Amino acid sequence: MDSKDIKRICVFCGSSSQVDSRLFVEVKRLGGWLAEHGIELVYGAGNVGLMGALADSVLACGGKVTGVIPRFMVDAGWHHERLQQLLITNTMHERKQLMCEMSDAVISFPGGIGTAEELLETLTWKQLGLITKPIVIMNVLGCYDSLLTWLDQMVDGHFMREIHKNMWKVCAATAELDSALQSMPEWDSTVRKIAAI
Ligand code: AMP
Image 1 (cartoon, rainbow, N blue to C red):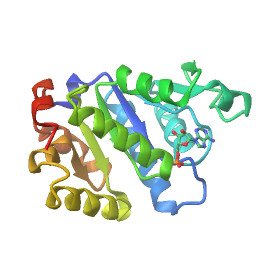
Image 2 (image 1 turned 45 degrees about the horizontal axis):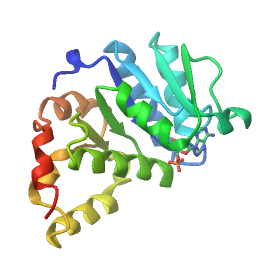
Image 3 (image 1 turned 45 degrees about the vertical axis):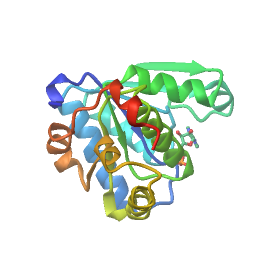
């Protein structure tokens, strides 16, 4: 898929403010890339950590951001207040589904268990052919090395087929995003037939 065909990208990333400062440098690059490409960011509307830094960088570069967040997080004051659009959901599940539905592609930037859960459920939907959109795992600073090893083990152990590795592309930095999207293997809903191993 060419980035010109993408209107909105959903980005999952960590909410922690305590992570390696190089991740903040890279997430700001990602925000700049989205704004330069005229691609709207769809994310979890957080105002702290990598989430907040990503939204701030898109806005600072003149881009557009939609945040999707459950009501209990708004009540706790966790939402970013300067987004062009804030969508409030009843549950975490509705939030994740809406973020994914609204977007033409998904990027998983480094994060914690929240990010990992979001990435893995999105991959599960793709394995079942419920979605076919590109999924890019941004393995910045090797943050996803262990997860990628685990995915390989799932294939080696016949929990997944080799072809399921075509569900995602890995890149190490924003500079590699265009080629990761362009080289993303085609995926369609007929894969449901091979979902069972
Ligand atoms: P993690 O990768 O564990 O930091 O989780 C990121 C996810 O945690 C987000 O998508 C949210 O579901 C949730 N989350 C945790 N803290 C916040 C916050 N301050 N604002 C918004 N979402 C948050």
